[in-house]
Image (cartoon, rainbow, N blue to C red; front, side, top):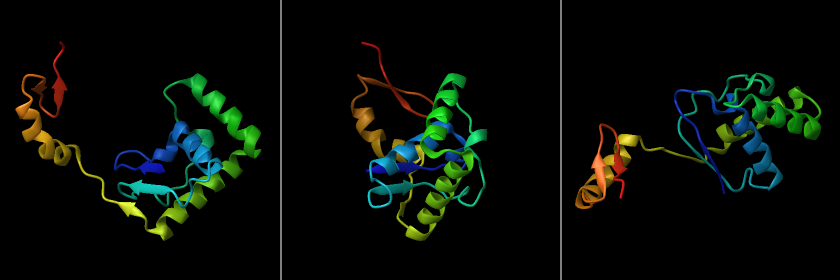
Length: 131
């Protein structure tokens, strides 16, 4: 399956690796039949361009852009693929509600407290003790 986890803070398709993963998922026939989407659709109608996408590593960005351009010819073609995927996910309606970090932590808090010998509670998470 191809799992897309959106968030409230950043448009995932403003990140070059996310665009690349979408292209790979399409090449592997995971879109749309095996696509699961979690999180809010706050950026569903925004018009980003792959040429402006960010990456932690400038080398990664150059390599991925080179790959995408070789495969699809133009930035506009890649942008169109992302736009079509966004519009498809809106019409598909196959989304799940993503749980917040607090909801997940609260669910497992009891179990982790039972394992106090292995975990320390921090302000927002449980961290495994060094052994």
